[in-house]
Each structure stands twice: as C-alpha cells, then as structure tokens.
Image (cartoon, rainbow, N blue to C red; front, side):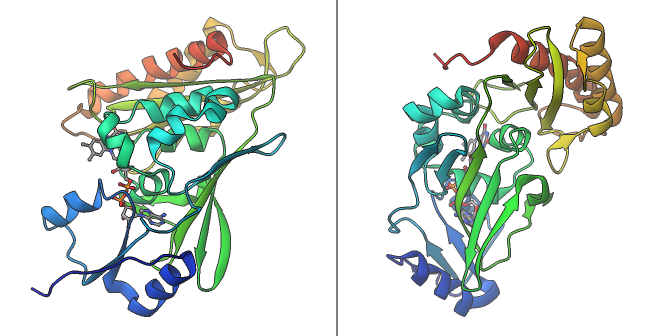
Length: 294
Ligand SMILES: Cc1cc2nc3c(=O)[nH]c(=O)nc-3n(C[C@H](O)[C@H](O)[C@H](O)COP(=O)(O)OP(=O)(O)OC[C@H]3O[C@@H](n4cnc5c(N)ncnc54)[C@H](O)[C@@H]3O)c2cc1C
C-alpha cells in the first residue's frame, strides 16, 4: 500500500490545478466527516487528497433581495443552521440543516460535502431540491451551474466530474406567498440519518383563498436519489389544498415510489411512512408559514 499524500492548497485555483494534474486517483476532502470514515473502512484508497480546508472565501453566506441565498460550499451545516440571514429569509432551510446528526458533526460537515457525498439517507438534498437550488462547480475548464434537479444520479453518484469542486450553492428567493416544511422521520435514535425525509414547497396563488399555484414535494432517504412525483404534484395546481386533496397526493406518492429496504425500515414500512409524512409535510407547510426555527 502506498502512503496517502495530502495536498493543502491555499487557493481554489491551486486546488483545481492539482485535481486536473493528479487525475482519477485523487479525492477532494472538505470537513472530512464522510471521507475519514470511507478511508478507515477501506471503502476508498486514493493515492492523494486535496484538502479544501485552507482555502479562504468559500464559506460565506450572502443574501441578495429577489435573488436568494448564496452559500459557500465550505460553510458548515452549523453555519447555515445558525446564520441569522438563513434563519430570517429561509427558516426551513436552517431547520433542515439543524436536523443533521448532532452539533459535533454539523460543526465539521460542509454543505458542499453533504451534496457531493450524495448519500441517499441525507437531509439537505430534499429541501434544496424542493427549493430548486443550483450547485456552482468549478474546474480548470471554467465554471458551470448544475440545477439540483440534474445533480443526483445514483447511490453516491452525482453530475460532478472528478476534477470539479463545488464552490457555492444558490437557493432561489422564497416569495411572500411560498410556504415550506421539512419533516425528518428517524427510527433508531434522534441523531440518526432519516428513514424518510419529506420537504414541501407550496407556492400559493396570493389571492388569500388558499389556492395552490405550484406544489413541490421531495422525499429523501427512500431510494438512490431524492424522489419527486410530478403527476402527484400536478394534482394541486390551481386547487385549494383541502384535506381530501392532500390525502390523494400523499397516497399517490406512496404508490409511485418504490422504496428500498435498509436498517432504518423495510420497503413495506417505508411505503406507508411516505404517505403519512407527505401528508404531514404539506399540512405543516400550510400551517407553519415563515416562522424562524426555535
Ligand atoms: C455520525 C454521522 C452522522 C450523520 N448523520 C447525517 C444525517 O442525519 N443527515 C445527513 O444529511 N447527513 C448525515 N451525515 C453525513 C454528513 O452530513 C456528511 O458526512 C457531511 O455533510 C459531508 O461533508 P464534509 O465536509 O465532511 O465532506 P467530506 O467528508 O470531506 O467529503 C464527502 C464527499 O464530498 C466530496 N466533497 C467534499 N466537498 C466537496 C466540494 N466542495 N466539491 C466537490 N466534492 C466535495 C468528497 O470528495 C467526498 O466524496 C452524517 C455523518 C456522520 C459522520
């Protein structure tokens, strides 16, 4: 076995040049919460690693009125959870980040790392996908934007090229009439990864009679990638989200998704939990509006 070589560049350009030069046998490491486990268990054995830890300026959180939030890839999940900006303009995103594991993990784990890891049982992807967030990735060839709708490809597989680094995550502005919720259901311990996680974004028509203009419901942790059922979402367009319609949408999600079996829940169990949590997530979104997390 060869010794692992760890590069610690001070700039993004240096990091990108290293990734380009070192080819397939190099891995990026950010907070290390997933990478260290994968190395220890022998799941990966790269020849070298490029650490992003010394690169400055990739952990900022900014908000542009009308455009939304820009979160640096190296911002930790705890940075996002506690940011007064995120909590004010997008409380459900702050809440979602706050449901990950425990404070120790959230203090090290970065948002870019969470998305790039693409573990199926993660929390942020469901909410960021429902909010139609976009990942900004850089390589020596330039910069590109990848909508999260195109980002997750399979178990631990994303649209990123091996020499690309996520630099930012852009989260569109939520309008005054947008209602959101994220519900995480765990089966083993309160700090566990989700058995099912459901994120809902409802765009209301703004005419105060409760008409839904657009509904997005993303279910995480039940399949290789976060699941969305457009035919069920479309049931809500132009309608009032009353109890009967919400139940129909929830049942449609339960029937359309073919969930996996794992230690957190069997396929049979998840199928039922999906319907229950889709219903609760829509109800919570309609009820909780834009409150800041406690
Ligand atoms: C005990 C424990 C409990 C957990 N519970 C949960 C949970 O409940 N919910 C949940 O969502 N997650 C959970 N996680 C996962 C955790 O959120 C991720 O491990 C973490 O977010 C990864 O970020 P990191 O900065 O540590 O990434 P690293 O471990 O450094 O890297 C992870 C992957 O991302 C790649 N990568 C990192 N940064 C970039 C970048 N900027 N550009 C391109 N590629 C990059 C790396 O090459 C690697 O493939 C848990 C993890 C642990 C250890």
